Image (tube, rainbow, N blue to C red; front, side, top):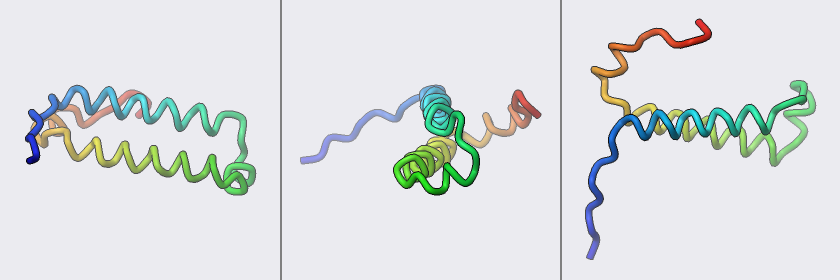
Length: 74
């Protein structure tokens, strides 16, 4: 028997994305591109967190994405 979970509010996915991005920054802090590429675990962990950001982004409703087309850092 599988129980269906209630849908998470989109804001939680934004929080997740921020957490994943913070991990990426901490994993890659102080590394140049060559060092990053040669450290397999760092490379894989970073790539995985970038994938998770993308997955979480798909959970943000289109109407919300359209409201916030700019982001800090642009």
